[in-house]
Image 1 (spheres, helix red, strand yellow):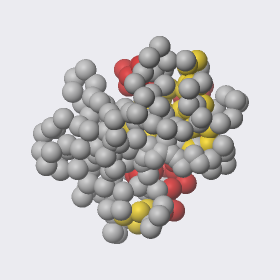
Image 2 (tube, one colour):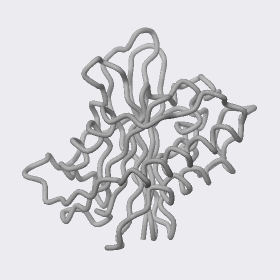
Image 3 (spheres, helix red, strand yellow):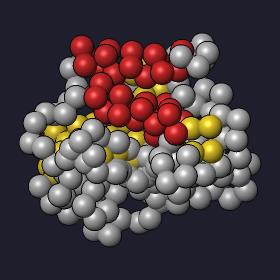
Image 4 (tube, one colour):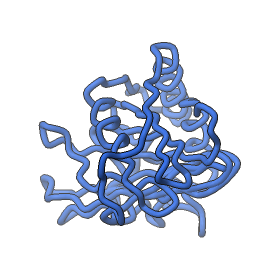
Length: 236
């Protein structure tokens, strides 16, 4: 089984909400709390759903991110194994993101960031449990204070997960996003997708880990800089 997750943003005081999903590839979505950012504040959205295909962040009704909840389990010498993406896999992941962006007319393409990748790996290797899935990082700020968006894809399978499959799963949420109303279809997630097509999110970095302390521990986590999914704002 697998699942997915992603974040969204709010204005005034920053409050994040994560998303998660599970299934036979599933993704996760956590809920973060964000320190104040300049005027707006990012919120994370998405909770991984369990499905045969992985998914990540849940979509906000008005694309409002779900608030990130602090992890129920604190990291302690996390029982994890990491499998970094190869150069070919990275190129394929970036290409999958950019195809979704260009499909809606976005000309600003994403590129891989080793700094964002390291940030994602550093958190993912802690295997912080949010229940059956990995919890979203509740402190998603880079060293330069840039807010980071996040999508999570998880599975119970022992097979090595594909980064392209994770992106494809998140991208399938396009069906549930209404650009006119800037909202997700009732009882559906679209926050993972809106993070991918958030025009100003130009850097991506992903981690792939297996956590023995989490049911859906076979996880792909992608972070985005700067993060998107701000409440009340359209992605493009």
